[in-house]
Amino acid sequence: MPVQKLKAFLDENGVKYTVIQHSRAFTAQEIAGLTHIPGKELAKTVMAMIAGKVAMVVIPASHRVDFKCLSEVVGTSAELADEGDFVELFPNCDVGAMPPFGNLYGMPVYVSEALAEDEFIAFSAGSHAEVMRLEYADFERLVNPILGRFSYRFP
Image (cartoon, rainbow, N blue to C red; front, side, top):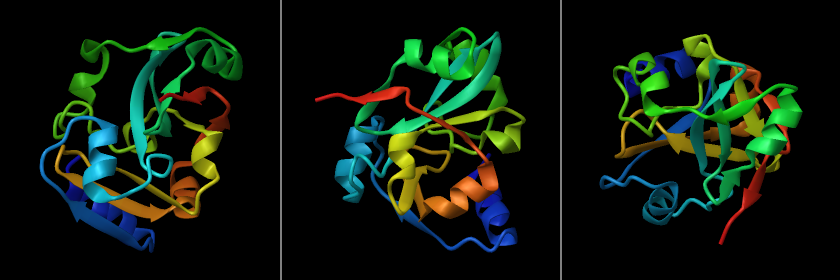
């Protein structure tokens, strides 16, 4: 989904947001550094296979997914998806820069409880050079994610 479509969706739903342009960066930690957004507020989208179906797992940039815990949260097997499992679902997005709006793609979204603790959420907006930032409450209202404890901070 190009950033324009995401902006239109947010505008239609009365959401205030900021778009931050930055030089191309490929890791969440690089993006956090370039945009001066704390790593716990910057979300990264990890694609997973849950019971054989593609799902989005959204965690703080400073965290990693604990797939054992995720499997317990969802009540079935969960594992990291291969790029081939999902790349065609996001034809207008850079791989690894998909915005965490799985609801717009007909897939569930699982969000780490650690992200829900902050007032804001920021995320890649479909490219490796743009980040969007909005209130977490608005994100939660629009996406209706499933919250759980399935990520851990790494150094």
